Image (tube, rainbow, N blue to C red; front, side, top):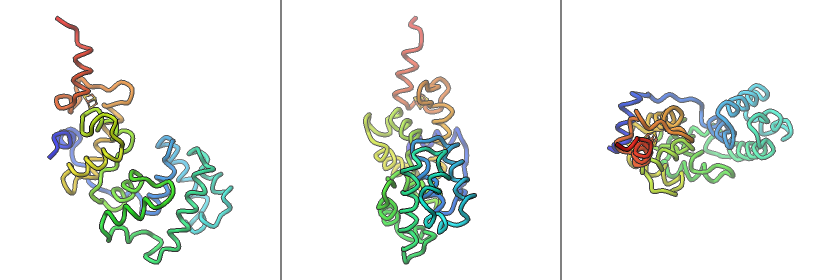
Length: 221
Ligand code: SF4
């Protein structure tokens, strides 16, 4: 097992899988997440659900009304039509408009389907599969990507997709959701974007960036 994954498991303990949203809701909420904060993403999602009782109502509504509902998440003029286009395609799919069928097909097939939507990249698709189905894939958002680069999970300059692939390969089956959640917790509390708290970090001994930073800040005797 990858030492970093093991150390994170020790530091953050067990995080059992729990479904947050059904797949269509997960897809919509991740479409709302681009270039905004978690709080505003959540606000926009709640506003959308409060204004339109069903996803059919969302896709049939005038785009300006959907834009209005999700405005707090920013880029509403892009996100609203994208959500409607996505819902239109899902509604036409003979396998089921609730997307529950994604949990019954091979992961590659599910990922290919999801990434065929405009604005749905590997990270968004991975979020849907990991959070709605507990699939074996570790989504690499900005926190996960940053930690992967700093710890050398992937070489400097690697993309978030490369980090996602490698972490998924190195994470034991059944631990993808927990590993993602632990990395997010670590990125939010310890491996901060601007000034990481390397002293006391559970990954310091195996993290090249942490060793470099702590060496640089220690006084020479
Ligand atoms: S040692 Fe520092 S750079 Fe490395 S993971 Fe920990 S906080 Fe991040």
